[in-house]
Amino acid sequence: MTFTHPLISDTYGWALTTGPNKASPHNHMVYWGVPYLEGEPTFEGQVNQTRHIYAPTDFYYADIRQGFRGDEPNVYEEWGAYFYTCDGYSVTFGQIGEPSIELKKILNLKEDVCPFDLDRDPCELNFSRSENGIVMWEHGEDVSSSNGEVLVPAGAPLFKTSGYANFDFGLDIYGLDENELRNLPTYGYSINPWRSDAGKTICPLLLFKEPMKSDYLDLLGDFSCGPINQDVPGTAMGLWHPSRSPETIPNLALSHDESEWDPIWLYEDFRFSHSGLHAATSGHFQFGLENIDQGYRYEIADDRFVNRRWDEVVPGNIYCMELGPAINVFEHDNPSKTILVSVSDDGLEITLEAVDGSVCGGGP
Image (cartoon, rainbow, N blue to C red; front, side, top):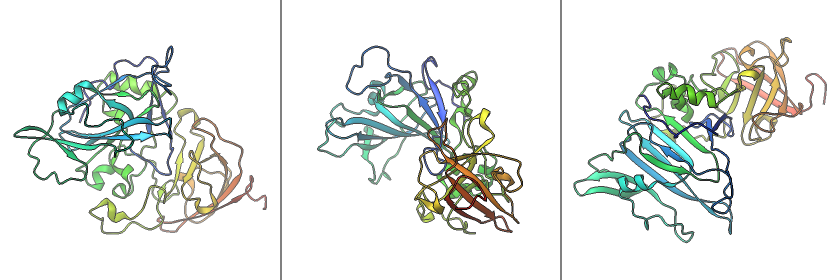
């Protein structure tokens, strides 16, 4: 699949960044930084411009969802959407403003269907075509009687940015087996890609035609497009779950019985100029680590068993890393934790324990 149309009208003032922000890889590792507001805000709380977001390819199914964010009296409206391509791929948008006039016309979405009303549940709607035109379904309803797609053509305005936040743009790939997924630039989970949502996602920027692809990658600056294929078999580097992967792959994602916060993720920094930084992110305060949004980082060293790269941590030894908590995607503090790591002889398990302290071998 190729994205043939631009996502935004121009790139002036835009900036893209990559960051974990969660305990494991996900389908929107790249965050679209909307141009800053120029002049006075047009509504309360506005911090950046409201700009149109366009369909980069034809979409044949639409799932849009309304949400309310913030606390009263400063509640604001935020939307998200899933659009599906002819390949069955899913394109995701998050933290965006309301649907455009053009999209509402395509979906036959009346102005009074999804009001800003805190006394009612926010909208979660699917759309399909029937003999009588566009049919709107509440999310979760039986759509088996649907007999046609809704065409949202490439280039159509979809939404505006919210004015409150940057937005997410992600891509999920369906219909491929695990071996095919391993051969794609998936987000950091190439060993067992079926076990994590990130295993079926790739950087959507890579699918744009030139010169759009280069223009958007340039907006990343020093950032890469994300943790592409960072699982390295036989080493500590990668995404580790609390149990081994079963030999029989569950048919349903719900059968995995784990959340994005269960794993521990050991990876390389996303910036080209900081390939000497490696990182660890974990949820639920596991292994003695705190639940820090951006995880921990350390400077790699060629020092036997201390601060080695994660892909140099191999069976047969115990390694120690001096971890500093990340402040944001650009900075981290001095080391405050040391973590001991070992890899099992078969390379399928790791053992970790973190304690307070800044120097490996320095005692409690």
